[in-house]
Amino acid sequence: MGKGDGGRVSMVRLRGGGGIPFMKFFLAGTSVATITLQFFRPDLLPSPIGVGFDSVIRSSRALHTIGFVAVDYRYSLRGMDTSSDEYRSTLAEVNLRSAKRILKLCEVNRGFYVKAGQYFSSIRQIPKEYSSLLSSLQDQALPCNFKDVKRVLMKNLGKDMSQIFLMFDEEPIAAASIAQVHHAVLLDNHEVAVKVQYPGLEQRMKIDIITMTILSKLVAWVFPDYRFECVVSEFKKSISLELDFIKEAQNSERTAMNFKENNMIMVPQVFWELTSKQVLTMQFCKGYKVDDLNFYKKSGINPVKIAKALMDLFAEMIFIHGFVHGDPHPGNVLVCPQGHNDFCMVILDHGIYKELDAKFRLDYCQLWKALILLDSQKIHQLGKNFGVAKYAKYFPVIFTGRTINSKSALGSQLSAEERAILKKDLKSLNMNDISQFMESLSSDFLAVLRTDGLLRSTISKLGAPQQLRLLAYAKHAVYGLDRESSLKNQGYKIRSVISRSRTNISYLQLIIFLKMLDLLSKFEQLRRKLFKTINLMFLLLFGEDKTSNYLI
Image 1 (cartoon, rainbow, N blue to C red):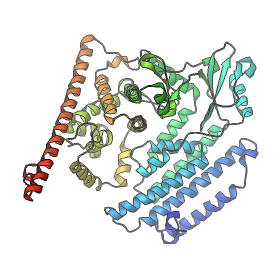
Image 2 (cartoon, rainbow, N blue to C red):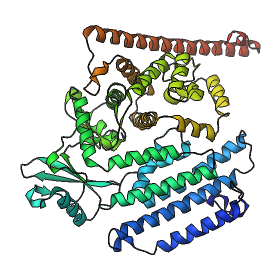
Image 3 (cartoon, helix red, strand yellow):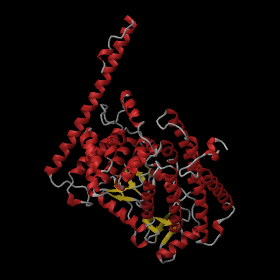
Image 4 (cartoon, helix red, strand yellow):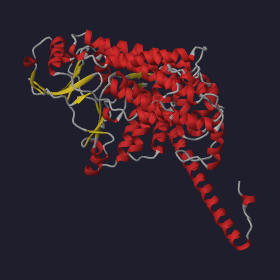
């Protein structure tokens, strides 16, 4: 096998000195197991035996893939200077090969592997080769046999379907990794969407999570600098919550309460008498995916207005309520051409939410205010609060695209000089630093990082400038700092006219500061262009540079 296929394993030495025999037997064993198991048809076996057998096949396939990925990294990067350009170039190539293998694994194994791939792709700190490829994963699945769907419905609702529904469409309108959704009409003519969980899912999830945990430990053992057990742990928590539809219904009602004063936000009503742990019945809502540019073109809606409404929605969740939707991909936010401002947003899929710790929420508000003002002292102080003091100087880069000493306007590109300084600084970091950074962050911080990553992708597709996102966060961070603590989770209200005025003044001060930065940046760009023009004239006329001494 060639280098790109993870071959030449006999030359690999792994941690602990037993690399060659271990990896030979490991890869040979998983190869035989994977090939052999493909001849079995788990779907023909009685459940839950079939479910268990299918999980073994998926686990064997995963172990085999990760084994090859480990060998590829070990062999390809062996003996290289980690600070060299050759190492970084080769690492990017191995990242791409490995990301392709893992993408294929997720597509073949489907189910929770697709969920895991999506989850990891939204974490901005993983290598870009992984995030760009894994973000293409679509959470889709082959629809479950309707006989199984009917069995789950009758078991959970305790009645024959004819006693509940006037019409029930056997073809699902959506099928994902844990459930499928059917359009139906109740006997009282209410139009509903019925979300039905696949049978045997909990058993399959347990085995898949155990496999993922083993794989993360295997990777950490082979590569001590790559430690992502904390991310697997967070994924396990989120997916466990997503399997409980009663919890999802409670989350949706709480979100509806939080945004009850906002006419642009809609949350489908829950039909509690037809809801259980495995079945969720809710109001049927029509709409278009939030990133559907063709719809906006036909309807005449400005996609930048959609991006602003989306950012305001999630900024309020994060900074005001501290109760955050954990999976804001485009399919979970629909846009309807109606309501206030010519459209309204429908929030779907409330299975994954993160309730932020009160202190974390306030610290996060402080962080964003400091990021906008580039208050380096405050940023370093908050870095200690978040447990990542060593890496606090990178917060501006992670969140705003500026360095901590940047002179660039908010939302603008770094200057060539700033890029060079940042590149030199980042060269000193390695995967151990990234792993240490991720391990040190709280689950709250990881949750907002993931949400922010998904939002960035969506507003970018909508053609909105990144400054729109930054201003939305700045505004709600100021409001969040002034929120009355006793109003926790009771909606967004400012306690008095005086307090509201003070908050608005604080926000206006931020806006004025940002405008001044923008003007200064434009003036600096104009000054440099002017000097370059004059310099060019001198070069043409006199053959010498007369202006370089005046450029800063």
